[in-house]
Each structure stands twice: as C-alpha cells, then as structure tokens.
Image (cartoon, rainbow, N blue to C red):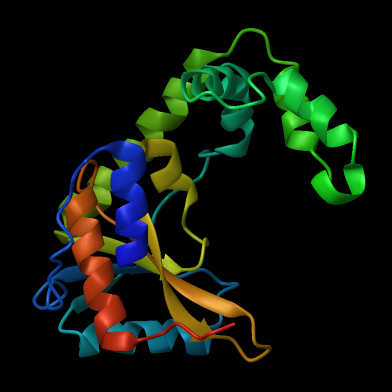
Length: 217
C-alpha cells in the first residue's frame, strides 16, 4: 500500500505523508457490496477480516442501473491522450501514432487487440451531455449510500463494484486478499468519498496491516 501511496504522490503532487494509521479501520463503518457472481467464501472472509480490524460492517446495495463507463471513456480518450503525452514529452504523442506503432509488432504489442483504441480514434467530438449524465447519476447513487449508512468507505471484491466510483471520480484502492481456490489472486477494493484520498490510503494501510493478504507470485 505504501508503494501505491508513493506512486499516487508522484502523479498527483499531493505530498501525502506516509505515516499511516494501522488502526484506521477501528470504529469505522464499512459498507460491504456483494454480487451474485462473487465467491461466497471469499466474501465471508472479507467481512470477517474487516470486523477483526475493528470495523462495523453493514451490507449495502447500490442501484447502478444505467451507469456505464466503458462507452464514455473512449469519447474523450483521443484528446486526453494527446494532451497528457505532449505535456510529459512521450515519444508517441497522438493516438493515431500509437495505433500505427502497435501494428508494427502486433504479436508483442497488441496480442489481445486494441479495439477500444480503434473506437476512440474515430471520435472527433465528445458527447459531453452523456458523460455529464453518467457522472451525476453515479455521484448521486454513491452520495446517497454514504449518507444513508454513514459510511467511511465501501468495500467489495476485486473490481466487481468499480463502475459507479469510476464514473463519479471517487478514489479506489485494491488491497491483496489472498487467492481463490484455483490460485488466482484476489483483492479487497476500498472506496471513500469524493476527495478523501488520504483517508482511503489510511484505511487501506490498516486493512493490509491486519490481514497480510498478499501472496508472493
């Protein structure tokens, strides 16, 4: 988690101090999100670990119907990519150039395809009304949950609940949670309120400290 915090400081310039609180989860209220495709045993284990770290865990449901992020990401990706790569002096500074570069060695560079990039490069004018609608809906759903249950954070397995926080711009952090029966690594993803990045890092540090869920590859 500390590595994640160092990386966060580097890309944001936030300057968050790394003296995190191992007991940040104590007396916190955590909303646990579950989905029918989640591994029941892993979910139960996650709840137990949160409680063992001192958190009060409540089951929460989010109405995320109509919140889609992938059909919004590509709408602005071409211009965002250009702005970011030019600002930081990348050797490839346009999405068109990146696509051509990848096609020169497809076996290594685009083994799994680049269909999302191909879609993004075709967009010339972003539909901001669609983007704004997704952001506002996601923010309303999350704010309502945080207020209703008086939550310090939402937690779910892996990436199962990432859509709404991603759309609304709420900070997310995934902490290792061991592995499932087949050996695939698992994680507990924490989400805090908008702008509560430092709080998120403290909660993640506390969970990592008390669970030690990382397995060496």
